[in-house]
Structures are given as structure tokens and as C-alpha cells.
Amino acid sequence: MPETTYPTASWTPGEPIPTIPRRFDSKSVRDIKNYSLSPAFRAYTAVVSPLGSVQPGDFSDIQQAINYVNSLSIGGKILIRPGTYTISSNITMYNNISLIGEDYSTSILNFNSGSNQILMKGVVGTRKRNMILDNLRIKGGRVASDGVVSIQYADDCSISRCYFNDNYDTTVKTTYDIKADNCIRLHVSDNQQVNSFRFLVVTNSRRVWSDRNYIEGNYGDVWNINTSTYEISISFNNVQASNLVATENAILFFNTGGVGYANIIGNNFTDTVRRNIYLATANQTLIA
Image (cartoon, rainbow, N blue to C red; front, side, top):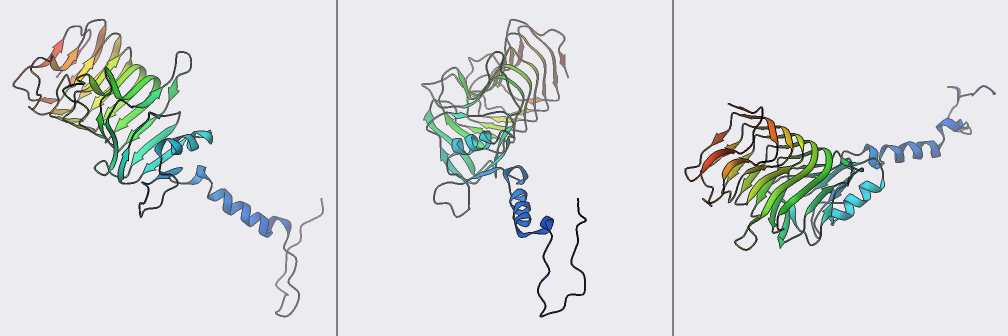
């Protein structure tokens, strides 16, 4: 291969400009610029803003943003700008995608008293992984006997710093903020719930952490832990004395069917109406 030559310092104004070697030509510079701005190198792979917002965004529809990030096959973070997003169909999550609100008090997903959900669901033999909801307000869900956030056959998922509100009415009394089934390593921490029904329902799962959540105005069991759920931590949560339906079992309810290896530590449960903790089955459980 011939040796590459470079311009010398002998050039003076008025003389022809020496040829720039191929490795430094203008196309190479363009390639480097485009590569540095590709989605893989952005802080947020996509940004969602409401229609008419003064803040710029790549999309106004959350599902379109998710589909775009999923099409890149590398996952990524989606920033949800402040605004109220009326959810009129299910939101389907995919592997390695994070939905991150700019502020949970202003980045609002309003399900508008409908039965639509955020679906973080795999299937038997094809589990989903590494899906995150962070810093969002999730309100107005009315799905029956399921979660506004529904997680199934999924591993290494996280819901944190979210504000769940008004996922309940007198007609649909079985809406849960979060329902998890057949999950491994689920984190539900640092959230707030106000005036909803059940906060977290878990079945057939293991290694579930639900820590440092604040609950107020809850209408049903805050945590309902069911069949074949093991290695669960419910710790350092604060539940205020405003649970409004006396017929529900308890703030923390361990159902029958094999529930155990649980740590229940450092919680502040203040309820003068019903039991704070009810353990129908609780093998190898620590309460402190």
C-alpha cells in the first residue's frame, strides 16, 4: 500500500490548496457527524410531546414512539414531555425500552375511565425483559380484574417514581394499579398511590421488591400476594389511615397457595379500620 502523504506547512495564501487525503475528506466528516447523532448515542432515543406543545418532540403518540424505538432493535429511553396524554388504546411495551416522564405530576397518562392498559407481556417460552416505567402519572384506569399496568412472563422490569391515581370507581371495583404474573426480578419502588383500589397484585412470581412506596386513600388491599410467589420484599412503605373499604382483608394480604420467603420490614401501616397484615400462607417470612 502506498504511503499516505499529508499537506506540509509550506503552503502560502494564493497557492492551490493541497488535496486532503481520503481519510479526512468531507464525506468522512459527514459520516462521523451522522453517526454521533444516531439514536444509539442520544440521551433519549425518542421524545414525545403533546400536539401543539411549545416543547419539541419526535412524536405526539406514545405507541408510535415505542414502535420506532423497538424497530431499532437496540432498545432505548423515551422521554415523555409534560402534558396530558389521553390513552384510547393499549400501550404495548417491548424489550429494553424505558418510558420516562419529565415529571410525574405533569407527564400524565390519562386512561379516561377506559379499560385500556400498559402491557408489559411476554408469552410462555418467549419472555420479555428489561422494561421500565419511571416518573409518570397513571390515572383513570377501569380495567376489570387486571392492572392498568399488566406485567406477565417478564423479567427484570421496574416501575418507579410513578403516581397512580383514581384507578377505581364504584362500578368497576377490581382495577389494580399493577398486576404481575409469572415475573422474575420485579422492582416496584418509590411510587405514590392516591385513591385507587389495589396497588400491587402478584401471582406465580419470585424476587419481587416493593419498597418505599406511599399509599393514601386506598380502597382495597394495598398488596395482594397470591399463588406460588416467593422471595418478596415489602419494606419501608408508608400507608396512611385512609383505606376506605372495611370489608377488604388487610393492607398486606398473603393469600393461600404457597407464598413465602418474604421480608416485611420497616413499614408504617396506620389503619384503624382493618387488619394491617393478614397471612393465610407465609412460609419462611420475616416481619420486623
